[in-house]
Image 1 (cartoon, rainbow, N blue to C red):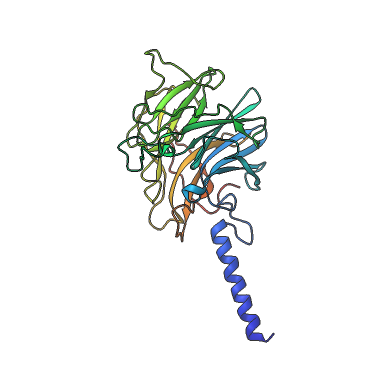
Image 2: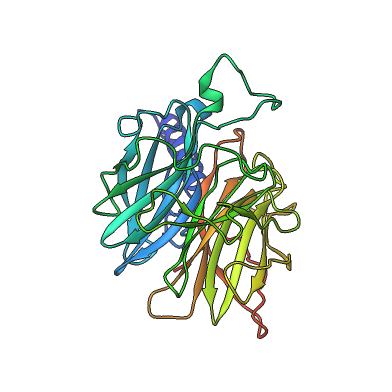
Amino acid sequence: MNKGVRKCIAVLALLTTTAVCAQSGKTEQGQNHNPLFDGWYADPEGAVFGDTYWVFPTFSDDFEKQLHFDAFSSKDLVNWKKHERILDTTQIKWLRQALWAPSIIEKNDEYYLFFGANDIQRPGRDSYDPDNDINHYGGIGVAVAQSPAGPYKDYLDKPLISDFYNDAQPIDQFVFKDTDGTYYFFYGGWSHCNLGKLNDDFTGFIPWEDGTLFKEITPESYVEGPFMFLRNGIYYFMWSEGSWGDGSYKVAYSMSDKATGPFKRIGTVLETKEGDIATGAGHHSVIKRLGTDEYIMVYHRRPIPNVDRDHRVVCMDKMEFNSDGTIKPVKITHKGVK
């Protein structure tokens, strides 16, 4: 092999390494931690079980290929173990289209994984087809396992919610356990957000005082992706705004003294702007670092350059607070969380 050929091979190897690093967010020195792991993933829910951090994301691909969930676990927020196919179509007989946006909670040593499936529509919507029940049967399902890593099995053999209430599409659910033991259920797409109370065995909902199962709590500019956490007696209710398919996607929040609101929009805490390292940051969750008062935002974004709408990656960045409890804007980084 002559010197010129060897030089060309070396240059190609360097370019390949650089491209891989750009996609994964890793450098040869290992100083960057965003994205958290390789592969296209979105809509991450972060959780802490025992001494282990978990991330449950959507498998981000063409809609008809989003037919399983992977999960990721870590002891240090840096090194992540992949748990493949913790749930897929073999466990959910009524699933015919995509599943996405998982949300998990532990109760009585069992792990309940909620998810949206089949992209349920209503008459009058563009994708509704009365001759194709794929488009109008589905909604929010739930699976159960003895471990966060699964394997999960369908809990009800049908959707937990398959109807429309207050014109909220039954997607993007989040379960929040309050200090009194109540399990609140936030969900909704199409710019409507509903709130319900799960019953004791998670098979249905406890009616509100007026007899309804769900009450609408939609804050200003809400689109989808509700999330709640509690800090220093303040309930932070958060959601995604804009369009999930482009750079307008972002996260806003409100503060309340109770889990049921009311929720008045305070401002935006996560968004991408021209010149940033990524676009379309949104659909997030929040975890608290073990043994500290540090909070971390877990979210997805599209790396630059990007040629595919579904090329999304999962990242973490620090979330900080002002003295009055309001949240400072989150800076998106390659560095991430150490």
